[in-house]
Length: 134
Length: 146
Picture 1: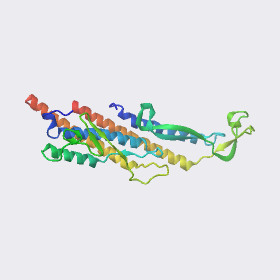
Picture 2: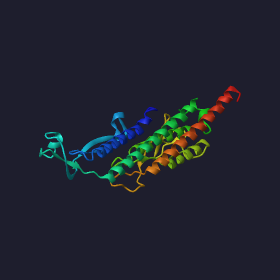
Picture 3: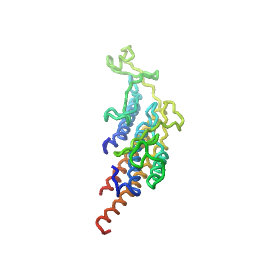
Picture 4: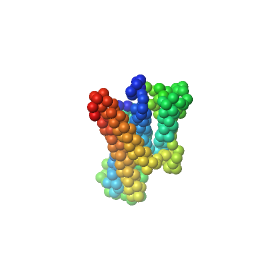
């Protein structure tokens, strides 16, 4: 691993948590969007982009069709209208769990901060190593 | 690389090994931080005590005692957790099982990981600073002036 390759591990963690936060934001923004399927991000160990066993990557982004039982009006013939197979100008509203979304959001932010700290630690080590030569 | 004479005596080889160890361990700690939310991930680590024991044995060899090195490099003998070579060290980390398992089968412990990151970076900085001062001393001796 090169000296700057050391940043790839924490960088992969930052990327993964950002994608997770994007998914949470999308779910939050679309909580009253008829036909919207919630987005769920899955992580797996390793960083294929850097060809490294270390780090993390987003292995899957899934759409979860969990609906609340309420319906909203949509344009007839659109994908959202056809989602429930009825094509009647109505589409189910997503089931939204505030507690889970907020908890996931806090977790993502904390994990992001942890990766920033790890990145800063690595930078500090490289800085010290360079000072040996100076 | 170990060379006879100036760089293989005193604390220099130990400081080199300590920096190599801290650098390698930083990779493992970064991996643990990156995988805090990865289902099924078990963070890998090497106990600093294992490294300290290896250094203690090497110090005994440097001063004329201790057991001879069967596998390793110079005065540094391989242990179960750490392999030594002229180019550097190779860690053989193990998964820690010191934490309660979460429902996603991850063995995370954020506080512990961040504590280890902080300790590890300070260890590296201490070793590099001591290493630098030792070399400054050497440079002064070569120049014959402070």
